[in-house]
Amino acid sequence: MSNKESMKQFLKDAGIELPILCGAMYPCSNLELIAAVSESGGMGILQPVTTTYVEKIEFSEALTKLRSMTSKPIGMNCLIEGKNEKYLKRMSAWIDQALSHGIRFFVTSLGNPKWVVDKVAPFGGKVYHDITDIRWAKKVADVGIHGFICVNNRAGGHAGDKSSETLIQDFAKLGLPVLCAGGVSTPQDFRHALDLGYAGVQMGTRFIATTECFAHKEYKDAIVKAQESDIVLTDLISGVPVAVINTPYIERVGTKAGLILKWLLKNEKTKHKARSFLFLKSIWQLPQAARKGSRYNDYWQAGKSVKGIDSVEPVSKIMQSFQKVL
Image (cartoon, rainbow, N blue to C red; front, side):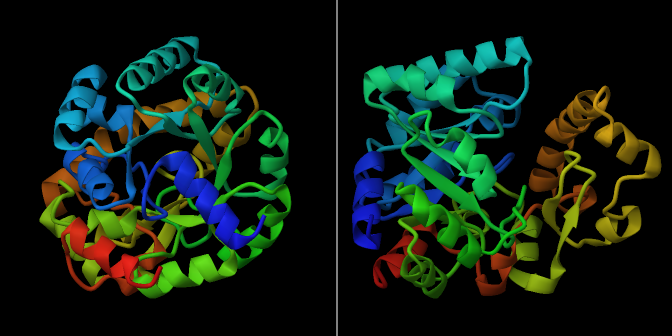
């Protein structure tokens, strides 16, 4: 599949004009940001965990409110890792609600997406899977997914360990549209990703530093001021490396798990419980950091794309600048 064919397929799958996704970000995927990206020709990705635990809105209510903000296509993020039947049942119900509100584009991550593919297929739903390595992609390529979102080593949040150049070379062989996630914040970055062969991009950090994102001003200012060298990886949020801004708090507490926690995370009998503990802790901690400023600046997630961000801008202005290089 050629680059043009790949982009055309992605745009058709998503039903959008610009090959740009606003990646789901806990806790920064507020409804106003999602709607603004979709209204500007790309696609905002709704994350039920953020709406439920951060915005304190029932998911069905959030869908109704979002539909009042935009009639353009929106997507949904589905975190499907683990064997917690109660959680997976709730995720399944969220997907049903999304389908009933006309959502037909789903981004899955941290698990096997087959059940999501099967669930949305009768409605014409498309599923793109977040991935960091070709070896994991090969395990899910035959379950009917429609494309991949390749998270590289410049991404914020749960970053990968490979470059965008390496990933596109590996994934091009699979014959599906591939999006670049990580390191894109300027029109030049966008154009470079397309020239490498990507069908489009997924951005997160750039969209935090927007007027529509409800992140605290100090968080946005930190992104604007940060350089690439200020982005570090910490194991202390979820048990696996997460890219954050190196604040004084990070320097004080460090970025590596202690001996006991490290052992718990590696032990087959305890690793799932240890990760669950860290996840539940971050459910409370990350929103505090994102919305309440430097008094809570324990963890401000961001990728190395901070290098190209020098101001807080409206989403529409950012998208117009990207349109010019398409």
